[in-house]
Length: 321
Image 1 (tube, rainbow, N blue to C red):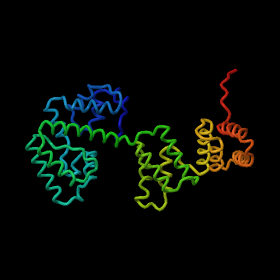
Image 2 (image 1 turned 120 degrees about the vertical axis):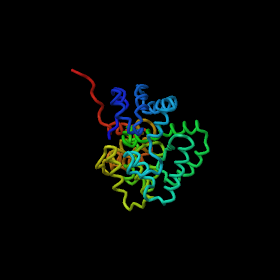
Image 3 (image 1 turned 90 degrees about the vertical axis):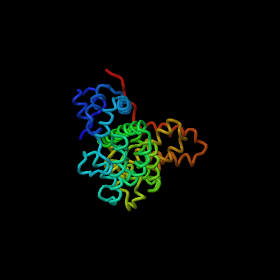
Image 4 (image 1 turned 180 degrees about the vertical axis):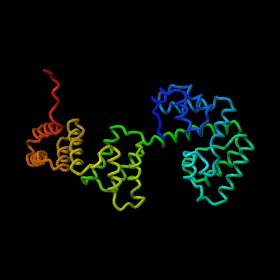
């Protein structure tokens, strides 16, 4: 299924809006209609903030219907919607011991008998056996608190589903550049395999959403003998398929030249890096002269800055005839 963008949802008719979001909430037509009426939405986060408020404020009869639209935890995945089946089928199902499903069935019945609505929880990939103590604790909760918790989890589930259906968000340009720089450093030998994997961990911790980046970050744990394939997949994901060492060196050279011009690094340090990563003959000569002629270093620094500017190419001519 394709997921409409926020702008498309805002432009959609009530019927189109309901059809787009119903799978995220297991149907629940009354709730989805209320949510459609609550738009427009500024962002995806705003949509789900509003969804949470609508769910909490609508009549209890509709709240119970929203909860009961979800299947029981531990039900047969083949009888569920595709999204619920993927969530619960991926967290146990046939692989679970028989006692797990029996315990869940008994707890679900006790919960529904006590509260009058279905137990819903954001599974988030947890094995079914780990849901048992959560369900047991919920049986001792206050009914109103449990109703609010279940409704909040319905919204969490829907948000996660939207993310999964839509796939990872396009990376911002600065994040694509950060990935390209780290991979390029690996390609030219500035960092080794472990250094590249550590760099992926840092990017993931900074919030970069990328399945290929995650796969590369797990390469050491999965004992990948050769990381060429995950590296190629990552570069393809950011639009740089076929990236090679020559292109890597050129990118790093441009980055070093920018550091010189922005006075982030000393001219000679940037020149050494350019000479190292790209074998640029001009910068190799400038580095050699800087080392051999200490009395001319100020003048050579100026030459390095000019060469760095030339590396970016001539400025565009904005004049018109």
